[in-house]
Image 1 (cartoon, rainbow, N blue to C red):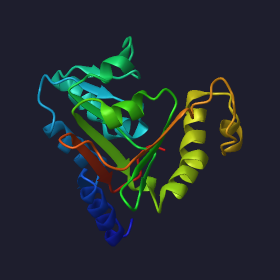
Image 2: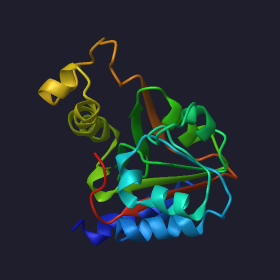
Image 3: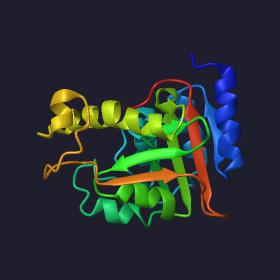
Image 4: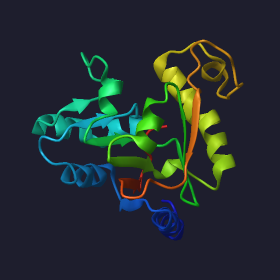
Length: 202
């Protein structure tokens, strides 16, 4: 279990930056709180995220009849673009620093773009496995943990998938094209960050 004092520090630092910081002991608690914050009928965009998938929120939304735009769903043409204009956007960051900054590396920029400047409400889910000391260790985590595992999941023939470490390659199928450090949300925008007390995603 992650030390309770460290969790409180991260949540406090997120709040000080203007994020709506929320603790959920389990992924089920996070999903229930997200569902309660989304009205029936509201459209929901989802960025590529194993963390969001593991919460089960997508199935809950579909069962309730909410329109969901997610390029991981079958038959969802142009889902990435539709997700950018949904009522609510759900995603994860690749790392969350102790100081309350969200660090991500993206392949297309749709997830990071929607995260920082997309729908007026954004819910970001991070398991405790994504906590890092600072931005430098966040980037290290992404390049040695998140990106290699995602590359293997996608079956990409890139160096990190084979070696487990980023080589800043110029491969045509590289997925490290956009890097963001999300320090402060836009004033007036509802930006929730859920810190979940169990590992989620990569």
